[in-house]
Length: 310
Image (spheres, rainbow, N blue to C red):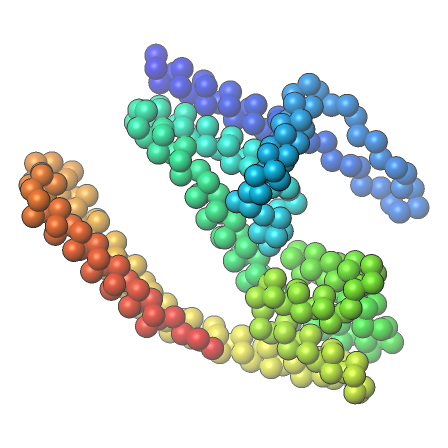
């Protein structure tokens, strides 16, 4: 009975969460037919979600809370505000708490609820890293589009605009952002530099420098971008070889770090009383603490060895 009640509450929370956070989107229409869009009033639940987002936004602004700032969300490719993402985290925390109640009781529910913000941070970091890696992978195609546009007689801004149209995310979003910023009066070099810093791309720094040097001294920018593209492709090939050679060391490190935990879990499952002395004797606790310190040192050491800089 308790299991069925908990499952029903969990499903109800998921349904309410989905209805509350999915707001109506503006229709996509051609530019020649575009009119000022007026959103419908929406359901009462939608209006409640909007008012809750506004209230949370006011609290975060007054308290100067920057747990999930706008820049971090943009780098992760999320088009939501801090308040909206905070609502998602709170909803996820309650869903995790319900799962914890059903699976293991109140203590596990409290643990899942507390871990929700940390899990959200990890998700943002993962999405940001994946987005940056995808941007680096698309640089070769981006440079080909830029050089092709320049050879066709376009200016650098028009070539960047064409690259934004022909590329896919995240390159299209970043190129479109550069065009928007320059249209509002910002210097092209500043926009390119910010893009390189935001995406943490050394290769894009070269592109920005090549464009800036060409604007100062002149020359054939298309040929310069082709040479930069060739250099970037060679660096990517070398990086791929380095990653493949270091993969064995990384995998060995993961196995060695997971081996003590795996052996401990296996012993506790096979013979539950075998490990009781380890957790009841002060000497056992001291050994656990020393093992944690030694594993941390060993893990950092192995990470330093296999983390090759290029």
